[in-house]
Image (cartoon, rainbow, N blue to C red; front, side):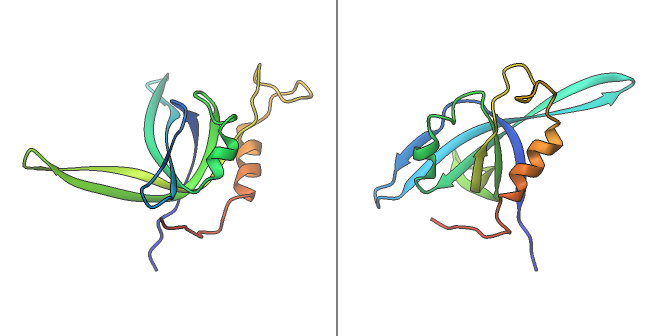
Length: 139
């Protein structure tokens, strides 16, 4: 059995682009930034990775007022590779085809409603409980 699943939490780098294909299907394109921190020689290093996300269906139209640049989101889906020829050279990119996109609660000052910090693992656990069990949807 081959497995191709990805779960990631990141911030939207721009508002989603929602388009309708000639066949009438709705596709949304998003870009998210994922921050990763680690220590190198006792110094904290921050590294940002950017991921393109594609979502098929009209769910994002209903959530579009919440999905704006800078908003934290949890994405579950699968990785695919697009390949094409340009100027005689093969080009490629990896993107996430999302099955689930959930926006995370906004925090004005990094605290929960009660004023206490909300650990990221609590947020992620809550989000992941609502995600699918490997069910994917095709165009």
